[in-house]
Each structure stands twice: as C-alpha cells, then as structure tokens.
Image (cartoon, helix red, strand yellow):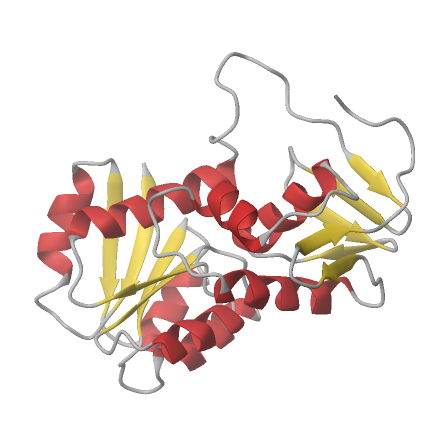
Length: 235
C-alpha cells in the first residue's frame, strides 16, 4: 500500500480523507506543521506528499522548495485561493500537480494515482512488453527502467513530471511536440491543464540539464530534444 503524507493544519481534513484514501489502497498520514512533515518525509517511508499553501511556520511554497532540495517525491499542492499565479509559483518550485480548495476527494486521489503510476512505471503496456532500452545521447543518458538520468557523467535529480517530459522528448528526439501534445501525453484527463505549465516544467528541466543545451524551442510550434543519438535506436 502506498503511503501518502498530508501536510495541512486543518485537523478536520485528515481523518475523513484517510478513510476515503483507504478505499483506493492509499495510506494517508497527516502532519499539522511543516516541521513535523519534514521530519516524517526524511524517514523515507512516504510515496507522495500533499501540501497546503497556507501553513504555520512557513507557507507551502517555502515547504515545497525545502522538500525539493532533498527529494524528488511527487508533490500535490492545495490552496484555498485557487489563483493562477499560485499555480505558476508552485510548479516553478517543483510541485507536480496543483488543486484549489475546496476539492473533490476523488479528484485528489486521481492526481495521486497518476503521479504514482508515472513514478513507478505502471502506465506503460500491460502485456508483458519489456521496458524500453536505455536512451543514450551525446552527454546524456536516460534509463526508463530505473528512472535515472546522467548528464556528462553526473546523476541528475528530476521530479516525476520532469523525467516524463524528458523521456517523452527523448523517445522521438528531433520531433517537435506542441504544448498540447505534451499535456495530453503527460497529464491525461485527470488534472487541471494549462499550457503555461509546460513552459514552467521545460524551464526547470533546462536548468537541471545545464550546461547541455538540448531542449530547443520552435516558436509557435513547441519543443524538441536536439542531441545526437549514440548507439542503436530502440523500437
């Protein structure tokens, strides 16, 4: 059973959510303060985190930034404000999804399930097809099975969304993916989609892949991976 940590100071929110999550084989634990949440996350037993924006000690944005310095755990952010700018800031700091309050519990579960499938590789073919081979480029290696990325001999820590975006571009390097293409393939139909999110994730990914200049922007068209392939091209 996957373990999910909710960091929210609303004591009335956790118990009913925990009961609801159990219906989907998700074990929810609540921390009322960021300090408590960070201590629990550092134990390494959680598979995803849900952060409220309005928190004591530090707000959810600062908490997200702190978590991202230490972990690539999937993060869903919650806010009562529902402001588009909040969504942009949250994504820029490394959140994987964003949900305004009030929300439907089923929608929150859908976000979590999508992120867990993505992280654990359960969204691929279910017919026994082996995992794709390692994708090797000049200066960059992507291992889909281990969900690892090596840039010029150094491991790169990516969030689940960043990895999926890079993997998507790498599978068909040179192909131009529009923002809608990327949203449809990475997010499915379970999340609140908007094209600005793609630009934010691309920006984050570019910074992590520096000094490689491998993600090209084609004006009014989209993005592509522009690196020379090394070795055979997988089917």
